Length: 183
Image: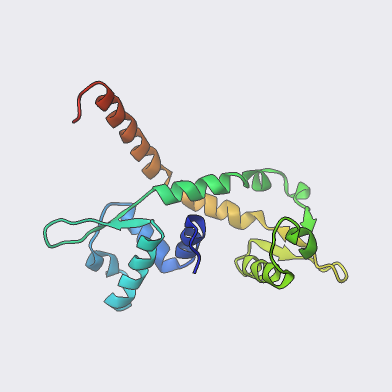
């Protein structure tokens, strides 16, 4: 199981049920029962999805009397958006300039992994539709597919206001603290 925050975030968001839960929580906090309502699955299955989202840092559990509502935590989505931003030039450039290809051995150069390990990671990226394999003789070069990254960035953009709003409130709070008004 991945342990770095970005891998955990991407892994958690790979499931459409969990993305639907994130979309629901974007409109406000909700109890497990409220989150389970649109799905035809058991409560333990919904709880498992919520646990994955909590472990990835995408949601958190509150405490209001006997209720334990879940709410969205925007910081991991902000981090994912920042990571995607570094690749924006791939989908902003025109498609005829996107032909950069690399062989497995060229891709393996910066890493201290074996070729089978690199190949395994490339297969995962291919299955996710992020790269595609060329058919040039025995080399089989890989090419980035920017459409999937662009789609992910668009999905994240719908949630940008969550972390922007939180940062704005933090700025106001810090300013009030500096002025001696801890409201």
